Image 1 (cartoon, helix red, strand yellow):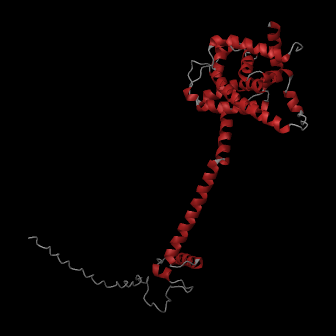
Image 2 (cartoon, rainbow over the protein chains, first blue to last red):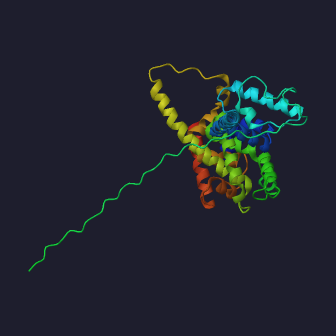
Length: 154
Length: 178
């Protein structure tokens, strides 16, 4: 048996001694690499991609909603005109007005010098809003209940 | 070979310390790989199981208690991973044999032939935990206590397990070996 043990040890060393000469990759590097692969390739990756796509779509929808509300138009061309108008107003030191937004025409809303002889910024009044007529409501007639007369028992 | 005394002289580790786990990994990774290669007879599978074992050990590193030698503790995790792999592999191989009946087998690649030395082939025919015990004792020079901690068995049964494993391996190798 002792001979067999000696032969076994020699055989194992012939096989596995070269393994000991190899230097393993540091654990932190190996673990980080695996974690990154797991997040990028697994369910985590799909979730991150979905969240990013959702965030981008939500931002786009919010921007479109704000422009549609400002210009009262669903046409992106009108949104572009409104933006360029705001930029022009900002450059000339005039405040942008909701009334300017509401007209989606290509003509600028800035008054000409001939029409406004008085110098200084024009007063901006909000657009007149007429209240919606409310329908008249007539009260519903409530039926009167007559008490039933019970027969008297002699 | 590194003697048992040299291994007992190893620096102490603190449970949960990432730097200490790094040291344990660098010190014992190749030795665990050797044990698993002896058990599985396949270097690629042993590499996978070793990485899996260290990943599990890292997760459980906070709960490690210094009473058990750290390398034996990692070995125990690794041997359990390899035994699970070994069982799945045996089932797969049985399926392959049934599937290939009537067809000539494809010749193995030179790398596979090199891996399959007579000793490695014989170790594969021995139960996985017995093969692990033989590598732990006759390659790593583990004591009975360390083998018991690695295999999760009582220390008093190690000697009889080793004797049974040697007898089985000798029977598989035959008289003509060496």
